Length: 330
Image (cartoon, rainbow, N blue to C red):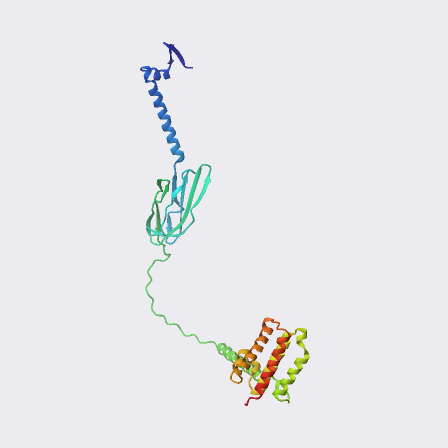
């Protein structure tokens, strides 16, 4: 324990510390205090600066690769939360014979009193040699820090067989005779194909168009009018059997055209029938016929429900067209 001695109204320390403070006159004592305080402040500032300093680290997963093989470049910056990154580096797509294949978005994470920024790049090279990834720079507030540059060695692909091979002379290849069963198989295949084509043509010629439709002894007009009266008496519209009603109606009209003008009307579409009638009837009659046939198509293919009045009007329109066509000269 330090000893002290009271001399003339002031305390005098005895020991090593007393030697420091008691040397010299009493007026010099504040100088030592200021010196000690300055040292304390200096070490405190250094410690604070070290705790708030920022670091940057660049690394690659490998520095020797073959031509075209990828290299993973990782950039990591650590700083304090009060000193965020104000400017991130920009690595171009190609530099120093190296190319950037892909780059991840810059990511940040905070752990305790440290904020970490990370970004990864996939780099490759197609020229053999030792190429350097330049030092990247990051600005934190107004302070710029940079990472170390990294060398990457691109090694050419070694061929398994690099010996020289001279051009060989032309070698005569003996002709191989075609086996006899190749010819037999070809002839049988052609025979079967011919039989199938003959049967197909025979089936088409054996089925006349609309067979049995023209077997009636009545004239085309009488047969059509009788069929229309039978359709009207069946009253399919009362049961809302629109599809059946219009299918029979258009069938009567097409059969009449076939018998009257010897035209295969059953195979024609609505547009083809209207084009045929355009040269036989006036425009008003063709327009009414088109309306009836369009309604028929809508009922059969789009499930349209026209109603009793419209269905009855379509039937009378077809009857008027048939009578008008029957007065034409063939």
